[in-house]
Image (cartoon, rainbow, N blue to C red; front, top):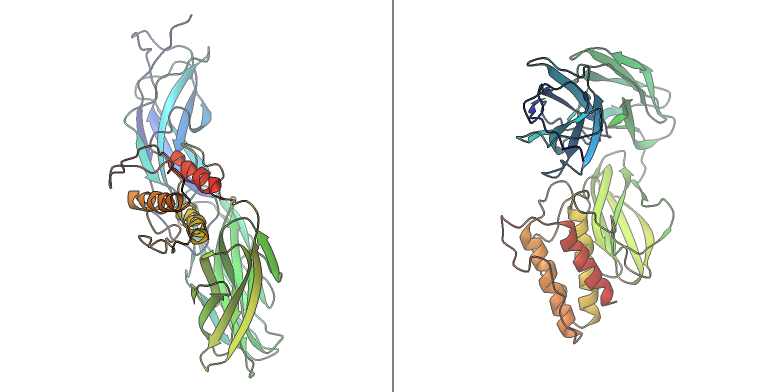
Length: 424
């Protein structure tokens, strides 16, 4: 058997900062470079270098075994201090990535992973300003108003794309755009041309290199009209069936004088204030088995209200996001915990127990860090349901959870999901 060859590589990164935008797609980038190897592990000259494998992932040890892409070697015999540089594209903006590199020779032998590991936050290839909601103000019928946005290249490579929106907004100038260097900008003019009385909101989407940045635009036309509100996710229809115990609603609301608050209530229990007004979201509504009438109400600055509703039916066997969770692949997030909380509370209520007093009752996706205490809560609440059912409590991997030490893994949540389903 041909002995495994090894090389030592020095890995470095050229990094950018995190750019916060209203909505982003998968066009994050990272620039990575390393010093090419010149000798085999036995000290002999390296003469058959074929390629490199750049391993990357959002977990701390993606090399080997994680996602990678192949980079051909410019030469089979690199010279001293020869640097190789490549760019990762299409990754999630704002996510922390861990990277390492291996070398592969012509026979397909792969070296050990380069150390030390490198880590960095992926940056976006372009930004759009302004970043907040852009209000065109009050415009009369048959009139119009213009606002401008600036698209800027932050990557250094070519950024090509276009802007789009929906009537009564339109793109007047500046699209499509081609930004050939870092810092290059393009001004895009958007026009509001109302045709109906009332207030309206829409998105202006800036799409380039596979990613999208969206900005919210609003405008109004004089007239006395009540507010309007609509649900557009998970459906724009009046009914929705699901096997997930947690449901997120989202939609839009508008008023000539401005929407001040959007609220929600579930006919089966629960209610509160939505996040946002013109563009609103209600995350993690816990559904009860059967029919749940979810009513959403908008209130404007003069006290006028409008309502809409969605009849959501929780059916059949429980369904979970990312099922099953995959070790070293699925990123454990707030939604995974919230779904299990809802499912466990259903099991508790069915056995005469009250809903559990969860630590951090509302976990916000992308904001709340999932901790050992959250996993401990799930186990405690579920064990109590098992006890009430007269059944032996499940056994768990890592039975002793240490705050700040225990890392929540896919296997931990898969175990709880299986135990919840076993109580159905």
